[in-house]
Length: 170
Ligand code: HEM
Image (tube, rainbow, N blue to C red; front, side):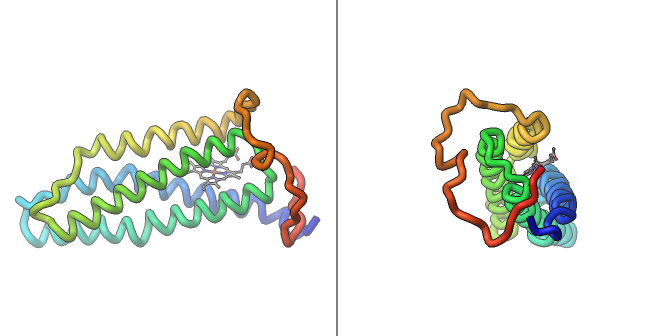
């Protein structure tokens, strides 16, 4: 076992949790910001809210998502969690990533065609991100066994390969 990896686990987990708190917070905040993009407000106010939502998406929420995903991916190998709840979690993370992309699409469209593109009611994107967030948190905190789900062997058993480094045991 590489000794340097053992203290790295809490660091990666901290990066994962800080990243996902900012990511999820941003995905809940952006739909509310988008409803403020009303072409009836002054040009100056429109520019301000447009810049704020654009920068929030590109400079805060997306980098936080990237950090959460990279740290989480490392944690899979460091903690050796090749278990059904993790695969189920990844499916819902994919749903969250799609919601992230959709919100980014709205941010871009509103900037490019302010008079033609109206934001959806905030509850719609908020509901879309709250469902996967709730399921992910339930899965990761309860860690259910889910042994009734028939996963193929290649997902749950070592394939005889070896990473470039040894992983720490639990
Ligand atoms: C590609 C994306 C993700 C990957 C690969 C990933 C992977 C992981 C891994 C391997 C762990 C460590 C589990 C353990 O130590 O037993 C973990 C912990 C955690 N993840 Fe994720 N995760 C991802 C996204 C998310 C998201 C989007 C959320 C929340 C909405 C989340 C919430 C958590 C929480 C709360 C923990 C701490 C659980 C604990 O230590 O008991 N993760 N994640």
